Image (tube, rainbow, N blue to C red; front, side, top):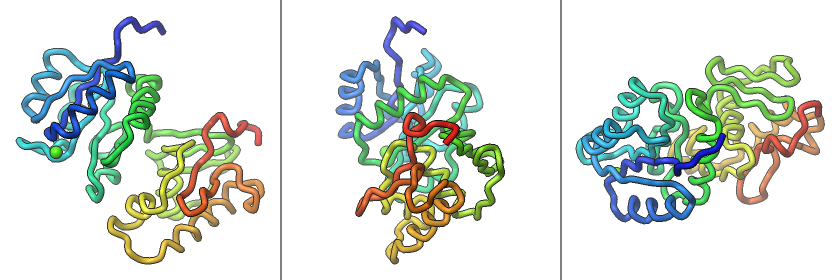
Length: 237
Ligand code: CA
């Protein structure tokens, strides 16, 4: 798959303090990025020339990025990454109601964002991140909310499933405890995060060959948890 032109990214973001440095950084990462600062500008830019991917802010001066997301999804299978602020309830509907492919929480690192953009573009159109993730012997199907290990169904409570879904959708990356609490439990979680450790230990019992020596879900002490990247584990293990 030889690509002669740079992937074109439409950055829909009204805050210049975010969009301008972002576009410069994306250019350094090998993308051709264009800014639209309103819903109207975004629609116009989209109609002029369909981009390869859309980065979409939620709060825009003339509308809601989530409505624009649904609208774009109705007419195109262009990958969409939502740029969300902490506490915005986008995560729960991404991939389901909105049809977005992924989301990042501000402030985000451009390097990480660029890596995710590349991963989405590699996967190609029409295959959302949130459908099926298969790593090693574990397969998670977000649409049917089912998990299998070596093709055997694994029973999951709703919260366990949500936690696993989050970790697997970001496999290879350490997801911070606070972010997990925000996304899987409640935004603005102030209590103990002990419940997270308990849920991780339940997942390990269900998924790991040896829960005491986990290969899939590893702890980054004091930081968070990481689900193994596909290259970390072989399917037969
Ligand atoms: Ca905004």
